[in-house]
Length: 494
Image (cartoon, rainbow, N blue to C red; front, side, top):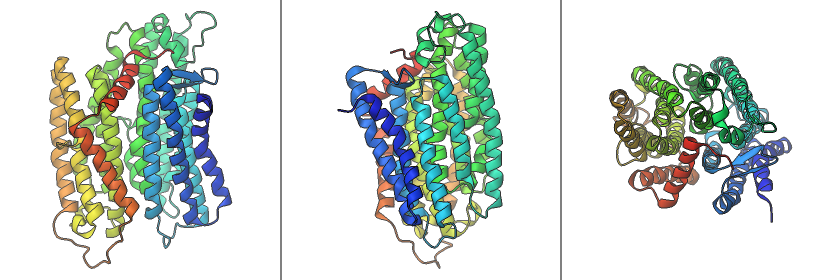
């Protein structure tokens, strides 16, 4: 029987092996099958880790270099699920007659895609703060070339902006990492200051002022990659210019992984500061700022994918607000992470097909998409309803829990700002969705697009998740989310 270490290393190595496999494949269509197989295998490899965690509790492997607890396992399944769905979608998105469907482009795309997944998984399982930082920087370098589309100068500009802004952010995160080590100079001899488990176990020995400064640098640095305003400037350009599958994984998992890094530091900073709430206030401030930015910029968007990018800014802000409130808010933030990932993947998939059908992503020039493309036009409208928090979808539930946590905690200014910004986004986003999906079909003269069974399955699967979690959270899911929220609240030191 394989050990947990073997399963963990195998899960990380599978996408990398799929990337190497692409070197042996010449047919561009067959190359697209490699990400599907590697993502499915990586997802399956997470099941034995789940069973081991359930039976024996959190554990470290490879000399405590890697850590598996409820929080890391939560993000592992989210990453592998979204990559699997997106890999299936990519098989229909890249058409054989497309000019970019060359062996060179598809080999580069598939290899970078699977390398990107490998690095994200490495970020999630890292117990070493240095390895986590290096892995997240590697995701920037790898994913930057996924934005690049042959023959598109705007994608080149977006790639450089993404590299520049996120590299500046990662420098701030590096300073936060160094300051965390400096704050741990009083640790007992032999205790590693680079392991999250060690930092959690001896958080009371950290120098409080240095750790607060370190946490601010960490939030600024990783928050840049997470798309928190006003550090989000790379996000609209990158999302709008990248191929739709890339935009989907950027929004659905990459932003979450950057926030995950902040979640790992949060209980350490809070414990070092005597549970004063100062660290949570830093996150709360960025969350409210993101919500305000989204409320201002969403109404004036015309490009569908830029509109969805600002929706990502909004929802990253909502998750940050939940983390800043704590308690029930942390549980709601993790639930919102799932809701946002599935709804945003569905929205980007729909926007990709609609934009290609109409030869434009300008929402002022698109009407009647639901009549023209019944599957994707309808899915786009429903996904926007989900994102703006319409009941009974799951985003309504997670946003309701965040507001409830803020109200019970006496944060009435936060409640007022949250409701005002959410209402502004609700009105403007609904107007965009109605313009695109409803009304007279202005592309009726074009031949109908064949619906793939796999695409229909993705849409139905996402909607089942989004409706089910809005009506009822099964007990195992609730226990799992509570366990993950407990790690964010108290830290973990197996």
